Length: 411
Image (cartoon, rainbow, N blue to C red; front, side, top):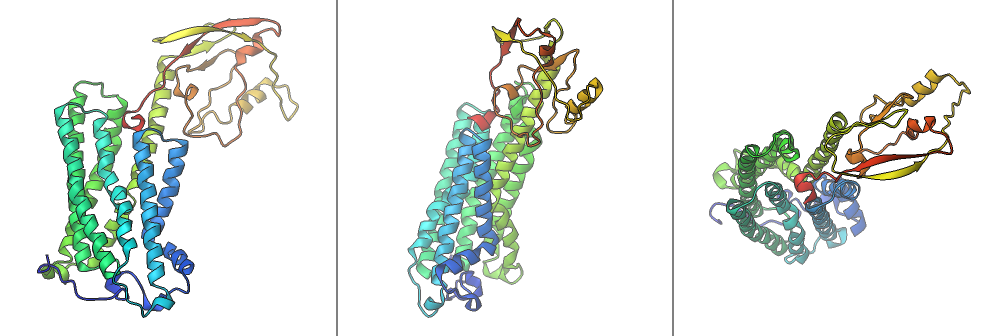
């Protein structure tokens, strides 16, 4: 390794160290820490944690979302600890102090390891959602096994940083390349296995299954993008620090790929959110087309493929519609109700005196909607109430349906 890599003796103030700048030494640790927010690497982990946390609290559930949240949290903690350390050793009061032992740089690896290796683990969760048997178990143990050399090289990175007292050097870049190499192998292996199991699963399941549609239309692009970035990042980190290639390949070519890698958790979270939204919309559209109930003057209904039902007595009540203009014109009231009918993604049902059709098996009845109604537009109660007398009871069947699950997102 020493023959291939030129690791000249340098200090934390050298540009190659990417640690301290003689022109921007900090007055105190808070000045240095908050000043690091302009660094895209630091800010990426901050905004990633905020957005992934919001998604997890309001939308996500299950093992997949928990891993996303834990990875985002680990990335934030590692970034905070690393930048606090840099702010501390780059103070004006410490300008002439020599650092040969910085243990917090090694401690940062405790957070960087789960933050980075969560990517192949998340892909493993996707694969396990629709793959069983000995082959799936073998792939699982292989991917977990590839984490061992990844942890080893990440440990070497932390040890080298702790020993020299700065963040980057040719040797550290090479260690990065080796760590990314094993992560890239795990990612590529996951991708090929997912493609194989999807093809195999398509022969056994309907092509309209939620998991198949998700993998076919969304994850292909994400999986391939992750693999390409990981592979190029590994290769360039190694070759840009080997003497024959150092002068011909600029080292900064790695920077945009490294920035993308730091954002992988956020990208996967957005991909999962898009899937869940699309799955809910698709489910609502399918149920409204196949299983609908119509409430008309007599309360007649039409339904197919219901799971079970129960009867409920609903006390009818008088219904009145308030018109701010004071007009009793029915067409005006009707137009007021239809303001948001055709505005996506709200898609409210049209209000009509003749009939009101809606989908009782829609997941909107049984779980929280992804898109909240921020318009404050309130739909009135079912219009069949208008035709019922104030002192009569109405008995009708209510059909109840189980929540849909969407593969790896609810594991």
